[in-house]
Length: 162
Image (cartoon, rainbow, N blue to C red; front, side, top):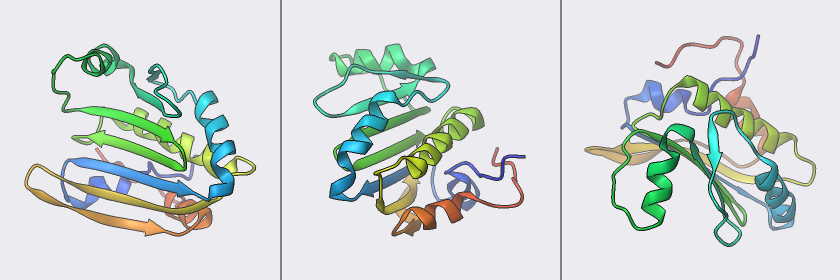
């Protein structure tokens, strides 16, 4: 049995707002290894957008056309979405209105597990934030290294978060 919770388990349980964010930074010496991971990352259920500079973005496949259209100048709001952005020394995951389900949250978590296992990548800090729709954005959990993230994701039991 997989003993890793989805990265957003605490945001789902906290009733702290519908928009959930994971933000991590790597050490300056890790940016080349992070960039290589970003190029090869292919979480199940996500579609890659054309790179913009050194940024790699992946959006849940169901929102690809709308999001790509917005980048080209359209103005359609997307309320429920999952987005992964990797640029420079930063990894960001967004789940608007809780995202589009547990499968995508688990795919995002698998990417974080790959990040933790990638040689040459040293996490320097990370945090989980929730807020939006009348809720003040607040940090639910944070840590200063890869081991603290590994502990956050690992548990003997997997409660449902839907």
